[in-house]
Amino acid sequence: MSDNLLFAVVVILVGFAIAGIARIIVRWLEKYAETTETKWDDIIVAAIGTPVQVGIIAVSFYIALKFFSIVPDQFAWIISDDVLNSIYILLGTWIVSSLLHDIIKIYGHEWAAKTEGDTDDRLVDLLELAARYIIWFAGIMLVFVNLDINITPFLAGAGIAGAALALASQDFLSNFLGGVVITIDKPFKVGDRIMVDTYYGDVLMIGTRSTRIRTIDGKLVTIPNSKITSNSVMNYSEPDPMLRYTIPITVAYGSDIAKVKSVLAGIADDAIKNTDFFLSEPGPKVFFQEFGDSSLKFVIYIWAKAYNVPDEVKDAINTRIARRFAEEGIEIPFPQLEVKMKP
Image (cartoon, rainbow, N blue to C red; front, side, top):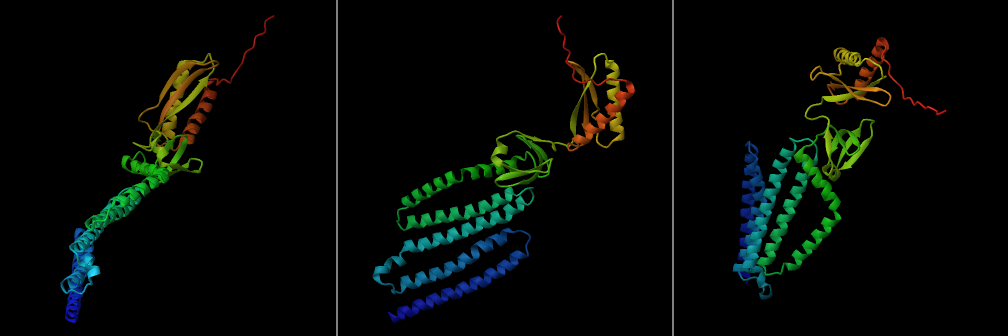
């Protein structure tokens, strides 16, 4: 028994020595991998290095216990082939988990860095955790099956826990998936001016749960991503920032329609030439639209260079209308109500 114990200790020490040599080799491989352009060798060495060293020590213990008869009969199950297979399964799970985790971490964040917003970064973080936990759960279940342990209660418990978690986080998941849809579909990006429901402003951030916009009066609005994906979104910044403005004008009955249209066309041309707000192409258009209750209704369609100058556009046009109509004697009517009394 003493000789067997001595031999067993020698085998374990040899295992530690081999593991030490393996560690030296792994460190050399890590340094070599740092000198190469590809990251795949770094990922593979990092995933295999430590599990191999641990595996060498674990197998040396197994050999020492199995082949030198130092294990009492009541603990004979420790040196069964099922235990050895379980060690292999756990080592394989460790390697696969580390490998997939590092692939997602390195290449996932590299991809996410090329996009705007932080939703994809958070998605990569979530995938990192999911990959690791799911693989380890599967590996542990394989160990239980290998050891003839009934895994039905574990699977049922995992299903119940998953269902409870899904119900508890239904709103979070809905908003998170909404953020993923926004990231993939790209209906807008940070800096764009959008309108969602009744909210109108510039996009400040696209997050995991919500999107934040700053309204034109400086208010910060946080909109759940699920609300955005379930509503129509108007993007004023895409495909380009130019925007057509509609300027309504009314004149008194009896005005010369041709003259009014000519004056309005001249006003539009003057605004284009003497301000920095307007585009000459597409050109402005003037239309006589309808006979109103107490006025003739006209409209100017004019294109501005950007969507964010509505007040400047209206001021430039309306100021010129007031001045030119006064010069030309064109009357701008005010609401009137005529009441006739019967004798």
